[in-house]
Length: 542
View 1 (tube, one colour):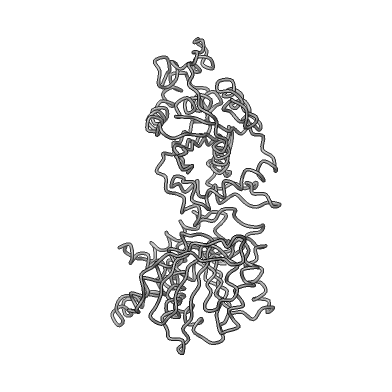
View 2 (view 1 turned 60 degrees about the vertical axis):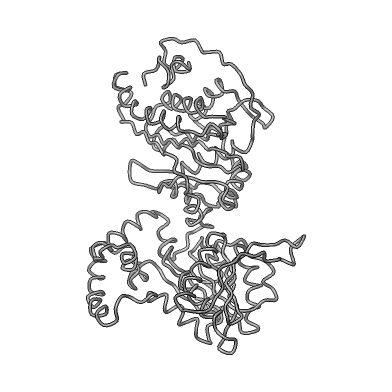
């Protein structure tokens, strides 16, 4: 594997490999539209011997773009020239629409006569109640068409042509989908299965191993990050983004990408399936839901914080509390809110996430706080401040394992405990168990898949969500940590988000009431429960 190559070694290797590029540009002009590995994919698919092709690849190298070019070439041809319908299937509607848009671009570039992209309902005759599936389509003058489906319909049976299954390791049932798709071969069709890996036990990797072991006579391509870079991936990125390419810049970009994926780099970038069943949520799916601009506030206190005077402690807390006050004032008063809190004190990170819920029940992160080396009383103050200010609060779920119970208990005293959907209190005290994960993680995944949730654009949150794995059939965070020394993460945002989503699913009824202020005294734990002593009141230090 090539990950062990140093940035300096990679820069030198790439310098030697690209010394001739100026001569190539002078002779042929700007780089051709397709990179080397993309061209090789299409060339292989054009051969009569390539009836089934499996492609294991690195993340986001543009291989789907090449498959779109090939789909257009097949669909635009006359029947006697090998023209065929092209069907594309992926696990998400966003990927399907992206593929169809790429096909439309290629049709225009090739100057093929084609209709505009249209949407239609693809009837699944074998489903109960004749269910219909939304699809996208481009029709060509040849009489053939490119059709994009966002799921794996059984109605593939009886059809023929070119079938492309993209990110195949993440579809619901690859084995059954292949059984239907391989019927395309009967009348001269073709099947392309392309994916990043999703665990050693995944059906996609099982088929790859069967091909490599000679059990299956399918064609096979493997394109890892370094293969793509050798064929000019980063140079193309620079060309598209108006950047100046150099071997040093490429080596730096490569190293940063490897560090970004951390423990997942082998699987995501170098086609090495992870042991176990892989990530619970895929990177493209998570990134597709990163549409919120909600703030992520961080507080990292020094190790000697408790040894400082109260004035020094107040000075360290003041900037964070001011940011928190501004963020809370910006919350939408028309939306309901739910809160999730994953407690930590030493080593790991405390994360609190506030979700807003709009009128069509879409959840969106409205605020996230991340606390490192923050004592319990300060965590309670921050949490209480959020809960008091959150408009139309319907519930809050707290990690009540270990020391987290103290925060959940204090919040329960103020806002009321809740142990069932019928209870009137706000605070759920959650003691994590396999059953809790088994029952409550799937609804969160459905929210991601159905675009019913939006989260902030944050690299750490992406890594936290990617850390969730299927372990013994249950999605949960394994005993792994990511990040640099002293700032390790343990899937903290994923747990806080799961807790907030859990609390948001049990809508409480809203009643008007007049609160009775707590007795104010000099003791912080009592004083900061008072509304007047909150960060927004006259009695607080902040």
